[in-house]
Amino acid sequence: MVIVACVAGLRERKKEQTRQRIAAVALRLFAERGFDAVTVNEIAEAAEVAKATLFAYFPTKESLALDGVGGDDLAGIVARRPADQTFLDALRAHCRAFAAGQMPDADLDALLARVRVIQDSPALLNAANGLLYQQRQSLAQVLTDEYGPTAAALMAAQVAASLLTLQETYFQRLLGGSSAQDAGRALARDVELAFDLLENGLTHAEGH
Amino acid sequence: MVIVACVAGLRERKKEQTRQRIAAVALRLFAERGFDAVTVNEIAEAAEVAKATLFAYFPTKESLALDGVGGDDLAGIVARRPADQTFLDALRAHCRAFAAGQMPDADLDALLARVRVIQDSPALLNAANGLLYQQRQSLAQVLTDEYGPTAAALMAAQVAASLLTLQETYFQRLLGGSSAQDAGRALARDVELAFDLLENGLTHAEGH
DNA sequence: TCGAATAGCAGACCGGGTATGTTTTTGAAC
DNA sequence: GTTCAAAAACATACCCGGTCTGCTATTCGA
Image (cartoon, rainbow over all chains, first blue to last red; front, side, top):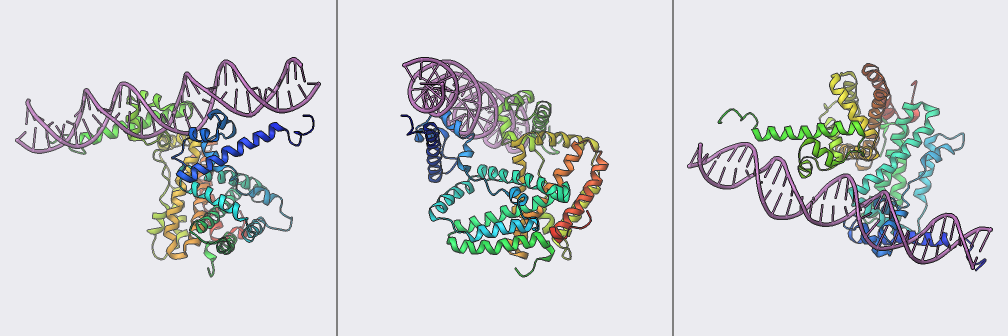
């Protein structure tokens, strides 16, 4: 009873375990019956915790479905880019890397289940949009030094909206039944298109 | 009792009147104490209607604050543009017209009160963002014929995000104390900047 | 072993929103 | 004018997400 439990603290581990259990149960129920048709009371009951406990871990019902759906840290990527790279090139490289990288099948299935749930509920879709809003703000912050507040806000808005669209398109392909490989290849093309549009403007779109 | 009341129907007029009363009372209370600190029961009581009646007119509490905040019909503007005009030029012209046009002071005050309320409540801000999302979708629809679905989605996203940013910047200036004239002039400049960025891309930004 | 945190609990409570069945008002036909 | 059906408004009870309160049981550190 002295050493054994001290890797991360028994307490911590149990907490994490409870949190995972709640999240997993919630996601399963959402996937089975849809976000709106599941009540938090049911989730709490199925996870064998009290409702108050559930809300100690997750601030809202929505956060149960959006757990871990943070999106990339655009502002960080831009802020940490090498000095000789434009911010658009840094973001383009990041997106290329994502499109090229392969995700383990199990993770992908879990992610897709979550995306399906989100896409089926207007409330969740809106909440997910809200997450992007914050990204936009912090990206604008980072760009302000270089371009001034107004141009930075406009650029950040364009970039964030484009990346959201890329993500949506990608998920739609996957949900529509494309193989992960096909969707990845399509995404790679779309990434180039998106950044070409951002760099060169809508009137200079060529050959797509 | 035969002719007198038939301009629009007594019934219709009373209904509209009730609706206006509810909306006005709600906006006043929101402006006084903030969106979250006012309950729908209070609004119903102050407007002298039952809660159920209130919800017969407005589907949600949010819709009370967002009543009439539809935004422009971007898709319509693009769809109805003259054949020799690019869609960006059509939108630019529309924004220029708005920036040049003057709003009656009373309307502007009412609008600003509403904007203040919205800006003070995260829930409302999110809901307002959701309205934009729909605009984006219909704009993408209209552009699909010309550019294909992916490019159209990206373009619509960029345009919608830019216009939202213009609107936010404009309102921030007004809320910050700028005169309507100054804000209008600044908006006119920002409109040109935004559309230049959209047309020519972020790497070709010049002289702003 | 003891005491301080703290996780967890049950249950009352609040506010937004819906459903139900009833009363009142309105519009129109007689 | 009287009458009658549509529909506006109502009171009320209810559901659900979310908070608060006060309590019990674990866990941790000394």
